[in-house]
Image: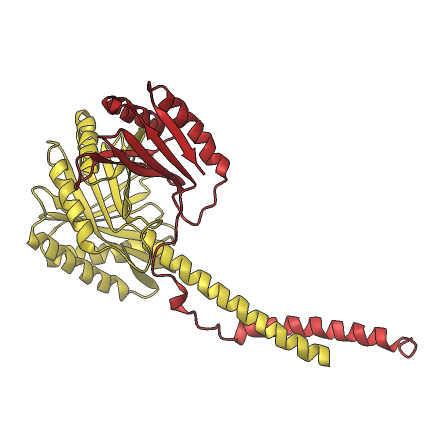
Length: 158
Length: 258
């Protein structure tokens, strides 16, 4: 049989030999081999980039600032975000706006003189890759709340 | 034979690759867990009628320090979370004990492992929080400064632990208390040991007395008007001494945790 089909049997032996060698080699390495040194320099020194998944711009009549803040707070309650609106230390005209949750966050600034709010909508963890539909679902509610403010203008950029 | 040699070569290289990946994963996981551990932990006890005042003070503290805050109620507790780019603070207020536990963490999503925040940032925040908390008349604040996790492979711990802690208390003329309790009073399965000093206390609770589970000893500073240098210094001395005493016991591993 072997003499009749030498190539076939040679291939079979080669394959079987490789499998046995692979198995033994792997076990040998796991038991007695030394792991390669880990290059600490491969860890980047700066935080991972975390680009906004959506950028939202809202313009209102500056006299309706309190209504805007109230609608932002309603949105935060609705979607269980920790919430902050506070004037910046450097400029009384500018307010920090932050909505934080373990998975997603909105961060930006409101400019009191122009009635303009600019927000970025991000993954909280830069390594996360939540589906874009998660962001869009929440933004539907956000848009509805903003549209309750007369003469407001809402736009989203992807 | 050629197959075996080739297989051995690639198998060995593959095994080394697997081992290296496992080592890297282990190191990353260790670094992540160390980074995610609280940098500071405090407990604030108030009277029931001052809970909302405490929450208002937390909101004021958050606004002043640019933290986004959310306080949400559940049937038996309230969840408190505060977020900022560099730090997040998490906590629970237990309605039955009227006690709020808060812990300060590096915001691991935005602060990179290689650039941990200086301790002074946490110090300043703690100091500022205390100024807000002081506005709540009934508030009693304690801060956990040290924690020892004791792992044993032997069921030695009740007698040894009580003996070592009692000896320490006697050496420094401190009040030593121990008691047994349980949710079912007839069982009394839990052991509670406390060493009480001026401006600090040390406590350990063990409810698994017949097993060889880990247990921990916690060292707290008690804030009245603020911790004194003496109480801080004494607590640090006691911590080092107890760590050394427990570390000398056979079959016990003592680990320090934040």
